[in-house]
Image 1 (cartoon, one colour):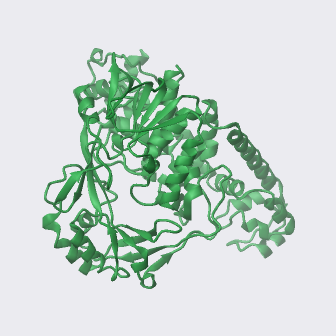
Image 2 (tube, rainbow, N blue to C red):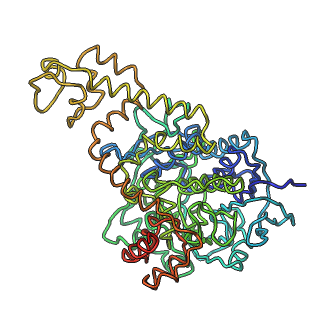
Image 3 (cartoon, helix red, strand yellow):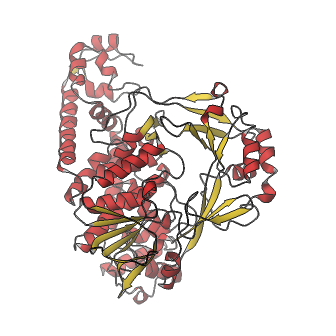
Length: 618
C-alpha cells in the first residue's frame, strides 16, 4: 500500500509542518502522518505569531526557506512591531492571526508541495533495526518504512487534560492522547519527563463591552514577516486591553481547593514566563491587578481569546471570575480553559542536528524536546527536516551557530543545558543579539539555505539585490556633502554644524533618522526615494550601531576558534584523568561536537575545558 519513504514526519503541528516542507523541498519523499487531517497547522493556544525574540525566529525560518512567515502573513489580521522605543536588536514583529485561515494556509502550502504525502492515523511506535529507525507502526496495524523519522508529537504523548477536579486523556481539547511511543522510547534507553501547559477560556465577542477597555490597534504602516512577495495588510482588527481586580482574584481563590495545580494532581512543571492566572495571583499576592489581552480569533468569527487568563480551575469558578473583569460583566463562555500534562524527552539526548544519540536517523522536534511556543517548535521542525534529508543523502549536517541565529541559540541551549521547564526564547538568551536582528535575517541565513538546496534562486537573487542596493546607498550618503545653511535650516539638531558635512556624518547623530535627511533638499529626498524601506532601515542601523556591531563581530570571531576545535564522537573521556567527575559524566552523556559546545554544558567547568583543550591540542 505504501512505498518506502525517505522521511516520515509524525505530527502536523508547527514543527511537523516545517519538517515535512523542508525535507520535501530539498528532494526527499515525505509522508506526514497526523491524527486529524482537519487540524494541520492548528494554533492550539493563542491566535498569534512572533513577539519578543519569537518574531526574530519566524523571520529566520522565512530566510531559510520555511513557510511559517508566509503562512502568518497570509492569515494575519493585525501587525505590530514591538519594542520600537528600544534599540533595533530588541525590535520584534508580531502578528495577530485568523486561526482558521492560518491552518487553511498551512494545509494549502503543504498540499502544493509535490513531495509531501498525507496519512490520517495514530503512530503507536517506531520500527528499529540495529539501533537505526526504519519506519513507524500505526494503530491501524500498518508498518510504514522510511529512511528517517521525525517525531513532533506536541502535547499528545500520554496527554492528560485537567479542568478543576476533572481530568481525562487528551492531547488537545476534543482530541485523544497518543500512547505507546513514550513507553517504547523508554524501553530503548531514553529518559523521559513530564511537563504542563495551559490555555484560557474562549468567549463570545458579542457579549463584551469594549467601551470600557483600551483599544490596541495595529501599526499605522504594518509590516510583515516574510522577505518574499507577501502583501502587508490594508486593514486591521484591533485587540483590546483590560485588567483583573481584587474581586476577580477573590473569586478565583474560592476554587483553589479544587485546583489540580495546587492540590498536586499535576506533576509536570509549567512555563515560568506564561503562568496561569491562579499561579499569578498566588505568586504575586502584592499585585492588585493583572493585564488581560482581548484577542479576536479571526476576521469573521465572534470567538475571542482571553490572553492572560490561562487556568485549570473549575469551569463555574472561571465563569464567575470572568464576569468580574471590566467589559466582561455579561460574558458568554464558549469553552473553559484547561491545563494539559504531557511527556517530553530531555533534549540533552540529542545531537546538534536534533538526531537522537541512541537511535540513528530518528529526530525529535518541538514540545517533545521541552520547548513551548509555535515559533520555537517550527524552527526545530525546520532544522530536523533539513538534517534528516541531509543524513540519508550522506550530506554534511546543517548546524547554525549561536553567533548566526536565534535558532542556533535555542538548539545549543537545549542540547547542552537541557530544560526542566518549558523553554521559551528571549532576546536575553542570545549573546550576539545586535548581530541577530529581525531585519537582517535574510542577509544572515538565505545564502546558507541556498547552499544546501532549500532557499530558492529567487530568494538568493533578492538578497544579492538588497546587498547591492545597501552598498550603493551607503556610498551615496558618504559622498554627498551638505552646506551648514541647508542642514541648520531644515533639520532639527541639538548642535548646529559649522562646516560642510556628509550625510553619513549627519546620520550618525542621535535623533536624526534616515527619513529626516529627506527634509534637507529635494535632491536628497529624490535619491532616498529610490530605495525600499527595508534597505533604508538596514543602512540606518548599520551606520548608527557600527561600533557595537563591530564589537560583537570580534567577540563572535573569538568564539569561532573554540567552535572549530572538533572533538571526535568516539573520544574516550575516561583517558583524561584530570577531568572532574561531573564534567566527565556530562561529556560522556552529551558527546559535544566541539570545545565551544563543551564550554556551554552545565556541569563542565572552565578547568575541564582548559584540560581537554590542552589534551586534544597535544
